[in-house]
Length: 373
Image (cartoon, rainbow, N blue to C red; front, side):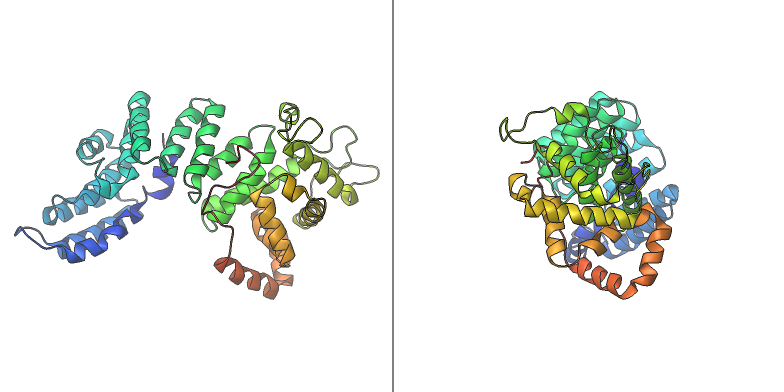
């Protein structure tokens, strides 16, 4: 069952791509009236935003009287029917139009979602695969395939599909989000750190942003018990650490090198006679700052390519890393973040202005240490 429907209202921005078409359409038939249709469509979208799907359905019906063959309106009516849990009716509407090129991969996605809601996994999987054949770079359809395996408790297959999704469409955030969430439920928290941070750079101001900020901050803290003489650093499972390095038998693998260098960076924070159960945001930022500096100075950024760590290095060189990390972990401890903001308001605001115009590049697939392209 897709979480995309519930979180994103089925990407209603699809209609925006067709506004120009509406304005330029020539009313060949007398009943066609793009202007009135657009008015009703606007009302329908408002009803959808207000979570009033039945009212939205009525508005879409009025819009379709003026533009009866317009596939995006049929699609949006189907979205409203799904919101109203009228899945069989939505299927009926989607069957003739889901391959319409104006809908791109979204037609396949919504049709598959309807089958998922009806507990027909075989049909939905067939639809998603057909969609991927038509749109192989669709991050959405890779997400849907991964989600099917995730709800079936097949985490390795789910993660594999989401990883492919990050490579097929690097700028689509949801696959990073679910990789981070999935790995947070395992002992390999290292991947939660990197895919969670990548997600935050893509989707900066939504409820999921707040959730991921907290998740990543907690993942760092769950991975360290500074002062514990037996097992102070725990970002990776034993099985991951035992995987041979592709660089050769005499070289550390990336996970081993990461844990080793984090352990070195953490030395100043280790209590003498006790265990530090939790790092504050400020101390975690100091640890990460030390880590990035030492990682780059040792040349590990060249030996172990990682786009997140390269981004951190760039920010450090520009004097922006610490404010970036305050932004990154801000929801991990809101009170600490608020105190920092009050004391550093001008500096932090200056960073936010810069950050709104600059950021990581997602034009090509990222290398984050897991299945690098």
